[in-house]
Length: 444
Picture: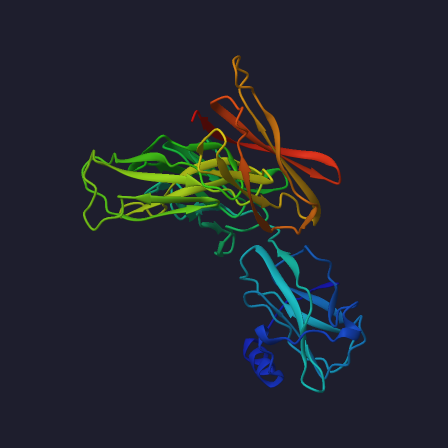
């Protein structure tokens, strides 16, 4: 319940002396014992989470121990200047939390903390109370009416001050009565706490509104986001399909200094996801206006499916690194085939090496069959469709790789030309994947 109080005394000195006596250091609460894990040791039962209250009120906080833990001392603490003015020695119990009349409108957390007779410390799950005034401000004023970012991706939080009757001036930035709307989300976006993020080049505005019932107060903040100082070409890289566990050929990315009047030092280049890079961009010498440097990016998927990442390029002018999107698709072929040598005369012997990779998250029993298929030609030689090798069934655990190798002699009556080695992987007798490699057969 919430009681109206005409006068209040803020017991901050008392609260801190209580906490010192309890020895309640917030980051050292011991875990609840095994016998008590199904029920919390401490729980705030009222007020309900999210209850709206007014400055100048006293909030009565009820606390119990659903797990039946005995406590020597229990108190309630909160965000900002909130705390109970008493300590309980048994539960259930009630605590008075005084709300100063000068409290800024926003949500505050309350948490019950306690110590058992043996000194074990516990805390409850926090609840929030929403402190809001009942009167509308006479005016709201942003701390900045014009905001100019240094670069795209930069963030800043607006601060809004409300002037109330009686001379009170309070920070209302995070009040539940506040709302923020960007006129152009392509230039800048803003969240419910007034944090603005520059997205793209241009100018826009954020409308700030304090609403209470049918009444509202509005203010506007102008936003300007400059063009980037580095321009990538292309603006993104796509690598298409790539076998899991293998690396792609590199793709080039050119980065140009498009600032108007100064050299830029590239201080770092890095990738995220299944991508890697080499570059000549990072240098103690600034990149001159109009000059470019090169980054070569490769893709090595670690799993099947769509894979995303970015290449981040930090420079001496922008706070936020330039991020270039990277995409690719991991394709999991159970077997990667390597013939050695890759060219052999008819009647010669070639060694076939297969790298068998797990393509699932479970253990499987696998059989792999290798077949050599040759060109159809007329003449004294003949084409071939020979089974090269069939593995005995073997077990492949998840996220593992198995190597195998076998010799194969090319039939003497095979036609010279390009042949395909096909590996068919079967799981429980059902073919699930094929992969291939090329073998060149020469005449004597």
